[in-house]
Image (cartoon, rainbow, N blue to C red; front, side, top):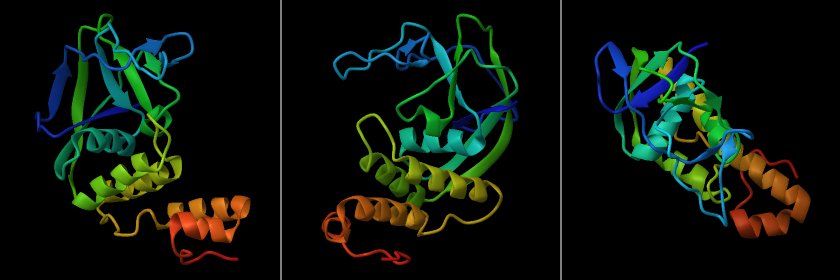
Length: 194
């Protein structure tokens, strides 16, 4: 299986990562983030983060960088030490290497892609309409679908979140009624069957 890491820097065709960063602390037994009173502590282990698909890796980097431009996706077939669960890690398909156990992670350039500003605004919206430290899974699903299409040479659409927004409206309307859904979401979206 291949794993993917995205950067704004063009590091050439081949790259070796020898040092990791310090991210959210992980409970190694549950494979989830340690949390205490809503606070997520930093890990004391140097780690290197990758994703299970190029579009998830791209999504993760765009979310952290918050800028348009050229993104470079690298891949490795080295097996990470842990797959994360919970928060937004399922949508990011995040895995981590414990860099205390690895001399280096060898990567090769998979693809470079130009990201328009619309992707950034959609990702911001995906995090806005979710619980704390999480992402709206429907929005993330559709954004990743269109990022995958973008990687295949297509353009990113202006209405990438249309279907996800319709699903959100339908769920809310079916549970609380159309009037409450309209109060929260505004107008009834196109495609809604009453």
